[in-house]
Image 1 (tube, rainbow, N blue to C red):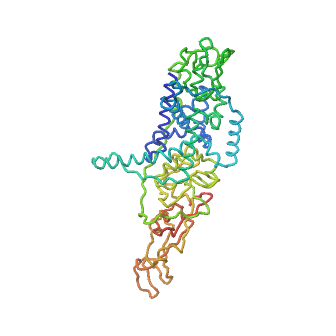
Image 2: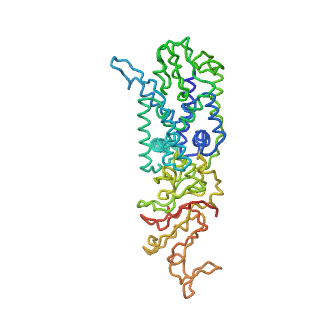
Image 3: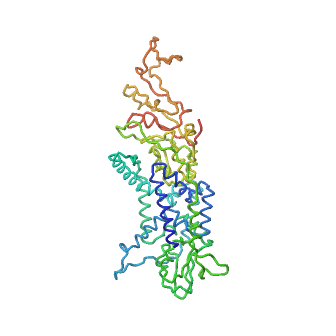
Length: 522
């Protein structure tokens, strides 16, 4: 019963979190956004007291149940470990399919060393190494890089089919631009974790993962533990051979020992025990861990496990779609002295200190603006680029999905007054000066009204009352006949990038946005 319930909840959580990363609409976050908030490291980074309390309470009650149900990377390892143990892959010389697990001594020095290094990097703000160790972030990178493109591709095929049937049940979605750095990091992560899980089960969880180490030491104090009835146990060793956490040691003549700091309460050992010697049972005062104890009832376990899914859904924002001019030639991303960070992140420093680089905001950006950073100090954290789209003032998607508090929730009405950067005009690239043709695209699409067009020829004047343009002789002139260039009011510009993205100059835009270290209101 324990294993069945645990597996069911694990599948629900894993599919739910995966949907959060692949879905480009607001449907997933409207109903399941709380699953991201419940992840332990993002909860700590955002100081989400409720989520932290739920995880700690579950751990002190049932041990590391978080690692086998709520953590999607833990479920991913279980699936790979199950494949590695399947009949298709595992076969011994006699034609029998062998169990591959065996007890291994706990590597306390390695676990504490990695945890200490993780905490030091966290406190020092060196997220480049920290994000590579974070389990939820690792899973997010893999899903964003490999599963989301497949999901969007299938959706678009169904959209084409729906169009032929005149029902429009599915709508087409734009395939996000996935940088090569994300593919490389996600690919290496998937390869390393996949090999470890395939060959040895939960090696990563019990030796490297900092979240697993913290919860593992708390799990030693848990009220319910997997306990052995020595009177029923025949020392067959099946529990040890089927423990993917390698935490059970069976020796003839000695009591069965379980390392509760590594046990993830998966129930595999209980399932294979033909004598019913293993039970998830409460602690008994004055009894040893191996003493017989009563089983945890179905009703109480379901009640406890159900605590993990008791949270409120987040408010979703209205979906937006990208648009603009068709690119004849790919734009070249400008070198910015100060990188752009999303509205709601407050500052580059705040983003670096709180972001876990889970890629959830990047995967959910409907305008294809957010990209993983390549810079060491903010490695894999979101940065804004405007070669594929711009940050639309009505879109607050990234702020609504961030589980770590790195991008604070903002209202649509407030976003138009948050300045994340300012536009800079590049005279050498501007079409009116290079080709002698009128343009004004930047001013036309500026949502903040921060760009004005002024005549190249300073002899033209505009009547303040009628707005009519006059030449040096006082004759009226049609505005379309005057060659004009843009002038940026840096105090009013919010840095949304509409001007940079929609500038027809190729490959370098004639206007680009320079970021601000600290955001301010205009």
